[in-house]
Length: 164
Image 1 (cartoon, rainbow, N blue to C red):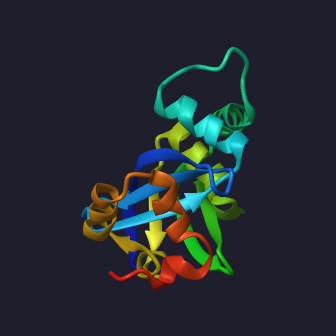
Image 2: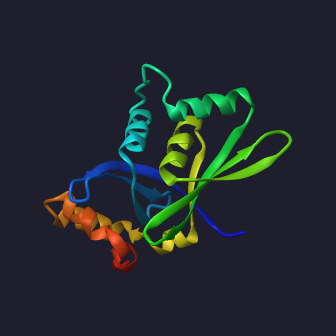
């Protein structure tokens, strides 16, 4: 079984250069930062949940949470498992009294569901290996006037080539 690292959401930003929201995760030990580009709808759902703003009607992730609740399914954790050609992969770990299942998911949907269900968010060693050190990220934030320049430096294959 591979080692997992718990992460927390530290920011939800907008990358104007790539016209896309970016969720910034940080390992609990504070040593690694993982930026993940996500879709606008998922960013909206995550942002509302982070700010504890209820939607006037159930959104997709609320529906999923409600289905899990009524079927007595627990989301034990979500794991961001892999990055292949700049695409992140994730899994929902579900359990009931009778079974445990792992379901493939986009990271943004998995994170939104984790927030809705209070499940832990984890990343694998491979994701940590492709992250940037938090000291380097903090230095970049201090040295740069434009957050977009920082985010664009992560884009494409560059994320695995940043000095750690």
